[in-house]
Image (cartoon, rainbow, N blue to C red; front, side, top):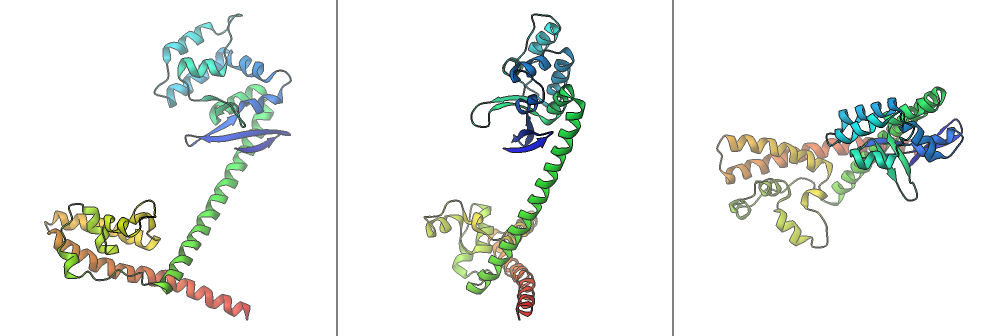
Length: 278
């Protein structure tokens, strides 16, 4: 869970089902009184119920419209009250969620949370939006930095692997070519890796996943290209044996190009670093 500071109040937020949810429990601290009562007072308002219902109709195909009408009809009566739990259970709403545990509390989708903030205080809403936007911008910058860092690691591994072994596939021998594979995926595996998925598993009993999970970025690029080419060969009516031979030749050619292009920038960088050090 992340937190943002809004007018000296720490407000948490979580990503739930790839959507941003902000903690109403934290936001309610902006007003004096019992937090659960503050949230309930907001929810019993007819305009609030109308807004929550509209949001669910747009975003939630499982929304219970019949129960929603019951709540809407009761809004405004002195005896009417509504809690986040009641709302979620009765209407199958997804916009407001009550969580227990260490980071428990009432969370709402950011669209709804901003509406709640407006009810608390227009000023508070503006600062909340400003801080939330700032946080999301920082997250995007961090994501970009992580991607660059991971790509640098991948390129470094390609460079070191090139020293330890040849990254270019070997030309298949006659016995390998003559094996008929019912699974088209294994045609590609054989063309690029020189073995089937089963052969790889037998060779690596202690590893999880499959042969493609351990492919480097160049091999994945080549594999994607082979899939496209193979579909063309299939439409042209080429036999599996002939396709395997052609795909193997393409894999050898492409991997030579890919590994050379990946290693040269790293070699140039190494030369520059040595120059700086000296």
